[in-house]
Structure formats: structure tokens, C-alpha cells
Length: 364
Ligand code: FES
Ligand SMILES: [Fe+2]
Image (cartoon, rainbow, N blue to C red; front, top):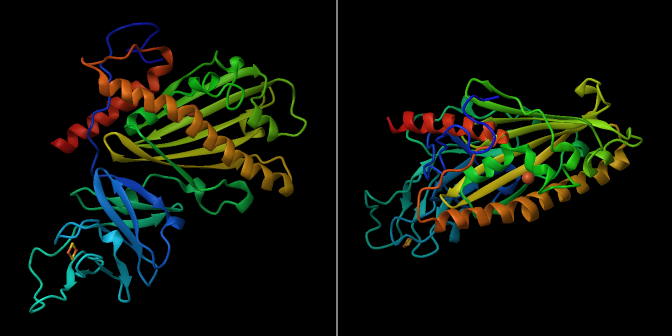
């Protein structure tokens, strides 16, 4: 239990509400790898910057500023030419993968020195394309650890999905690090009234924040019950959510026989990758990898679709609307808001401290 957070108003906790700033020297998920198709240009705004991505003929990725230096047309409206060049749709300037203009079809065909766009490091790992938009060297070793996504049997991983949330990414992290909301917002689906009463220890692992929950002797929430044909009437439900700066979460969750070791049960790793589109909106990438699979392949095939649909429904139809309305309330506030802190908020308070520390270090 964190000494600075308690029930009700408790001691004064300065919780950073939407810093409105992004950690720039960090890797962000620009897309699932499979979204960047050969021969296609993919546009996406990341950290408020317009970006266009494409795959070169050797399969490697390119990420460029999506803004032609001539009249600022998005390069994503253009054409990918042989030689891995992008031709602007408006007046035909051509750019290579480094962002340099390599062809000007007009006049003497000179290339003005200002005719270039920014190029960002982008690499593929753990099924995603990771972009670096900071000014410090991009070190792929710093990509967050999502090895749970590597080499997973096809029927054990759900769709590589994403939604767009019209809210600051910190509101989404707040939601994901507070598993208590599953008993209310996702009642019957991911939680129920039996799972309200839970121990919620919070641990630190370096800068990572780990929030655990344990609900002994509960009835199994709907989705988990399907993972376990012939499951006992009462089970223990548990979850362990790890936040990794600035906006990554893995959720190890499941059910087991009351009092049994958790690993003997079944559940899934929930993967949540948040990328700020800008201060008021977020690209939310998610998938799930099952563990302790107790069902046959035919059932796994059905469950893969079902779990993907249920989780998308939970995020899009249950979490999303509340988070977006929260954002509207915050936008309309005429004074600085300071949240009332409950015992379930220890995780969110801790991660905001880490984030503020990292942002302060970046600001120098
Ligand atoms: S706006 Fe791109 S070439 Fe003119
Ligand atoms: Fe939720």
C-alpha cells in the first residue's frame, strides 16, 4: 500500500493530470507490422506530427514527415515509385527514404536545399512497427519487452487490433492500471461484484509499475469461464498489470482453483500499446495471448474470434465512451482539477510520478 494514497480525500497527492507533453525520446508503436503493406503509403499522426510510412523493396520500413516542403501537401496522397521514392501528388517532387528530395521535375530541375522532409527511425519487433521521434540516438534495445508476442501458436493469439480514442493517452493508462473498474464497467464480462473486494498490491521494478489484484473464491467472469470447460463453481481470479514507460501495459490475468498455484489455471496476457496521436487523442493497439490453454483447437479457433470481439467491445463500447466523456469534462474545466484518490489509485499515482520524472529529465 502506498503511503501517499488512501481512501477518500486522504493525504494530499499531487497527481499529474494529463501533462499534455510527450516523452519524445522513446519508442512508440506506429502500426502493427501487418498494416504496412508493400507498395502502399500509410499516414498516421504521432505525437502531433504527420507521418507517412512505407515498406521499401527490400522489406525494411521508412517513416517520413508527411508534409511536402513545397506546398505542404501530405506525401501520403502521392505515389510510391520504383527505387523506394515517394512522389508528391501535387507538383511531383520526389523523396527518398532519407527524406531528401531526389527529383524536381520543374525548371532547371535544381533541388532547393530546403527541399527535404524529416525521416524517423522505424524498426519491426514483436509484430509491431516502432518509431522514434526524439532527438537522442534511437536504440532498438530500448524497445519495451513484448516477447510474449513472439512465436505464439496462431490459435492462441487474437487479432492484432486497434481503436482510436478521443482522449489523452494518460486517461487510457489510468483506466488500464486500475483493474477495479472491471467489476463495474465490465460487469459480467471481465469482472463482477465478487471481484470488487481484492488485495491490490503495487510493486516497482525499476521504472515499471506493477499492480496486482487477487479475488479469492469468486464466480468466474464470463470470458474466463469459457476458457475452462468444466471449471469449478468458485475460482480465484487474479491479474498482474505491468506499466512500462511511457504508455505500455501487459496484463497477466486468469483464474485457477481456489488456493491453487496461479500457473495451474488459465487466462491470457492482455497487450496494450498506446501511442499519442496528439494531446487529445490516442491510437490504442491491443491483442491477447492465451496461456494455460485447456481447450482443443476447434474451441481455440472459436475463442480466438470471441475473445477478440469481447475485448474490442469492452474497450470500444465500455471504456472508450467513459474515457472520451472524461476528456470532455477536463477540457471544459475552468479550474485546475485534482482527483480524489482511492486505494485503487496507487498504481496510477505511481506511474504518473515516474512519467513526470522522465519528462523532467527530458526537459533537462
Ligand atoms: S506540394 Fe508537394 S510538390 Fe508541391
Ligand atoms: Fe476496461
